[in-house]
Amino acid sequence: MRILLINAPHPSIGSRIPREHLPPLGLLSIGGPLLDAGHSVQLLDAEFGPMPIATIVEQTVAFNPDSVLLGHSGSTSAHPIISEITRALRAALPPVWIVHGGVFPTYHWREILNEEPQVDVIVRGEGEETTPRLLHALETHAPLDAIPGIAYRHRGVPVATPPAPLIRDLDACRVGWELIDFRRYSYWGNKRAVVVQFSRGCPHACTYCGQRGFWTRWRHRSPEKFAAELAWLHRAHGVEVINFADENPTSSRTAWLAFLKALIAENVPLTLVGSTRADDIVRDADLLPVYKQAGVDRFLLGTESCDEATLRRVQKGGSTTKDREAIRLLREHNILSLVTYAVGFEDESDRDYWRSLRQLLSYDPDQIQLVYATPHRWTPYFRQVAERRVIQTDRRRWDYKHQVLATGSVPPWRVLLWVKSIEAILQMRPRSLWRFLTHPDRAIRDAIHWYYRIGRKVWFYEIWNFFFRDRHLKHGPTLTEFWGAPQDHEAEAMGWRKKEEEEEERRVAVKQTRMYSEEIRQVEHANDLLVLHTNLHSR
Ligand code: B12
Ligand code: SF4
Image (cartoon, rainbow, N blue to C red; front, side, top):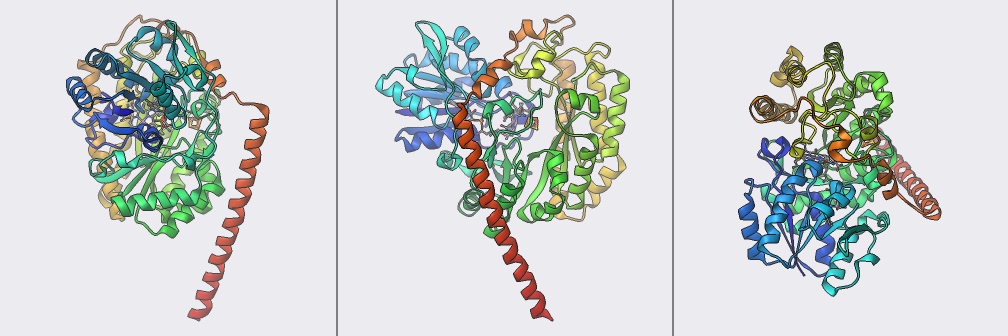
């Protein structure tokens, strides 16, 4: 089959302001297995430009595909643009198969198949194994009901097949790196960059998290194979910056350490940036020199709130003490901390915003980003706030950077004022400016400058948009009226596993952990001997 993967031009700040783009890992992850299945595959990355819809259609027609596959990592807020593109594609190419995948369609499959006749099939959950099966069935006109993990129309009615089995061996699925021209992708101030995934999922249970249930279980790749792939990306393609897509790459201290050591052994000058939990950083206080040696230059910590009661309610499982300590530890090891902080979990008052500001100042993070609590229908948080009013009905704005839920006592303009003031105060306080000007490490100083350059643009852009482009409803619909009934049960159903399967997974995990522990013990023993030998020699 001729297959075109389309990365839609996302309207959000994350895509537009930086003018640097990262490769769409989700699409490349299904591209690799499709190439291996013998299909002819191309990627059209419409983020560049951004490409107008007419050009996307023109280029698709020129490629003359049998199937067009779309998905975007900024899934919910990307959906409206994907709808527009698929409608235009259907009009231009009536017989083409249109397949949609990713997090948002995984849960909103009923609505999409009901309201958008141009979409033929939705892939639900991980795409690497399901997509080649689906395309083989489409090519051979085989029945679709035998393929787990999809949704389609049967006699005009949307139906979903049972969830696909979880991919156990992540190393068996290769990323289709040959689909991109590496020179086009950059991050961290025009450094050649890629997005990669060491692990999938997260063992925690934050009620607002739209990702945790999607991957169902935390798993990781072989640390050595993964390190070798990163080294290859550097040597063969000049990649300098590695951006981790993982929800929580450090979940297993043993596996993460094994990866860091394997990467150090590869001896490649890579910059690693990613997100993780503050409590993992505190747990790994003794390993932070190894983090740094492997190339870690920044970790994003989602602190979400400074209020212990809110943290408990959203089941974050962290604490303000750990958040503060993690930031301190990262700084001690010359690793930048980017702290994200969410407003709107509660019906906050001006006094709460004031407390947040003071608390964040006491955290002393290097970089700060405030986001707005954004309930996804498949999360328990959605149920908790189902009756709150929506002030933003443009779904493209459901991207964490726009207030979407009304707060009782503070009108949207004042929420914005607080958000933007907190960001400005945190970034412009003397300590931050001092680091901006005098940080002794050149690479870290450049990274700080880069963040200020982007931050400055985003800051003004968001204020401008708020007053001149965005519309806010005074008496909008409730959350349920706007999106439909809560769907958290469906997220649980996606994680459905047979008892024996679960037991087997647990056995494999225990075995792997033992294996890595043994390897690490051996490496550490060898290192100790080396140090001893060097010391004796130098005497
Ligand atoms: C790296 C990243 C970015 C990077 C780069 C993104 C890029 N070029 O791909 C940057 C920093 C630019 C970014 C920006 C934004 N991001 Co972002 N980002 C991520 C992150 C950390 C990893 C994404 C990823 O690569 N995942 C790994 C791949 C393998 O998974 P995947 O994309 O889901 O794909 C799999 C399946 O979904 C499926 N699949 C996916 N697409 C398709 C398509 C088809 C046809 C099929 C069959 C299957 C399929 O198969 C794939 C393999 O199994 C995620 C969090 C996370 N851990 O996922 C947030 C995340 C995707 N981002 C998010 C958001 C909100 C944004 C922004 C809107 C933020 C903003 N306001 O600016 C923008 C959007 C613009 C953009 N370019 O994405 C949210 C999306 C929430 C949602 N459910 O809607 C996430 C989930 C963060 C979160 N915690 O909620 N992001
Ligand atoms: S720690 Fe992060 S990834 Fe894990 S459940 Fe909480 S928000 Fe989601």
